[in-house]
Image 1 (cartoon, rainbow, N blue to C red):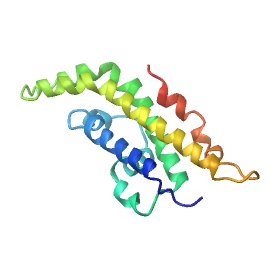
Image 2 (cartoon, one colour):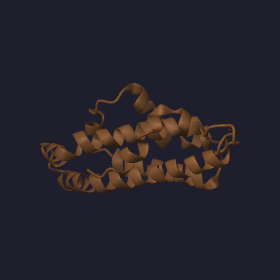
Image 3 (cartoon, rainbow, N blue to C red):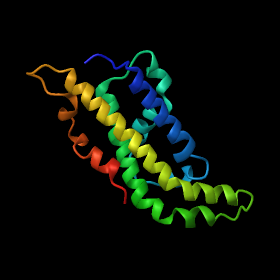
Amino acid sequence: MDRIKDAHIIRLVEQIGEQYRTNISNRFVRPLLLQLALDKNTWDLIEMLTEKVELFRYQGFHLDELYRQIAACARFIEAARNNIIPNLRAKLLSSPNNTDKIMREMAASNFPPNLQVFAENLNELFLNLMEMDKAGVSKNQQPVYSQIPELSNVSVLLVNRR
């Protein structure tokens, strides 16, 4: 399949990146995120999707790479739901620095709904890509997503609201 240059897809990727940078990986929560047990490849894929959109805006995206980046973000979301959200408030508010107490409280309160919005945007991107993928193959071909085993449970990870 050719590179994806669809304006709606690009807009979704930009929105996902902005959401991640502003509301997920902010200065208060980032140190906790870095403690998640995710491998370097997963972090690299997350960074490519959320930070490097300028590299692909004009060239277009490779479908298989976008799928892998979405799968990495789904693993991140699952890890954050299981390992950060349960103790987030205690960890953020245990800091001896009182100057940012209100900001840390806001970050703790807003992280779960922000993570959910991030997951919903990723799922929307994933579903749009799957539709585009299906439409772009002939009868004798399989869509790209069906050839990537790690995508089998991505929607489940993204829409699960523990």
